[in-house]
Image 1 (cartoon, rainbow, N blue to C red):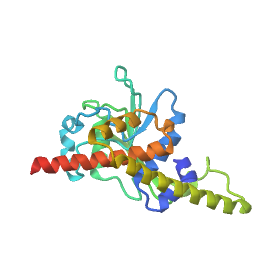
Image 2: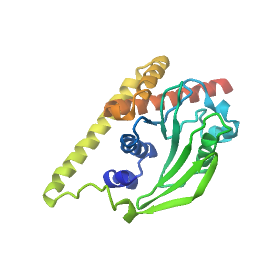
Image 3: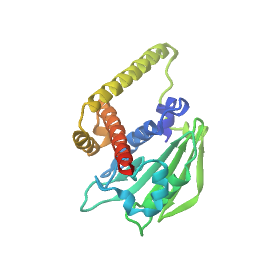
Image 4: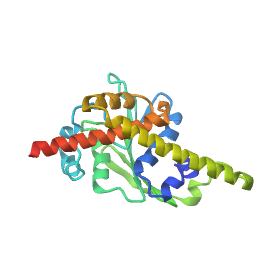
Length: 242
């Protein structure tokens, strides 16, 4: 969390989607966990709709227009024969975790449920502080923990730029943002031409790779694919209701 605040503070003050924060959080977390993989928006059940495995989440899923139970960040092994389900993380940007977020953390850490993660962590990222809520064995553990601005920036903070380097840093930031916009546009164009079957196949491939091994263009493509599949599912539900 300190690295997110130190390196990516603009994500916390510019109204960015929480997925951008989740990506950076996962990027910094994975090198600290030897032998485990950190994935964003990972569904361990593949094409099977996991909503059937947790009926208590049905109301939340319906309200959000989804049939998928996909945490923002998962810390685990992908070995189906010997899974190690360490933790799931739900992230909010400039807002509190809602009842559905808390229910997901509860259900996915319950030892009597179908998911069985050891820990669930809810993190609310605000501009000047963050709140953390821990779940284990299907229950909230202790009270929410708060970290203020001073604590978040007290260590692991990148060196401050020298006055002479501010212009270069500003130029580099502008170029990076322009590249990100261009990659997103290119990813949208590429994904729009794919059939639903090819889009699912491509998404599954990109999702199978550790997040630290994805290039920036591949990550942009994965986000575009996730949005495309979400639209496909919504259209299928409309047709079914009709």
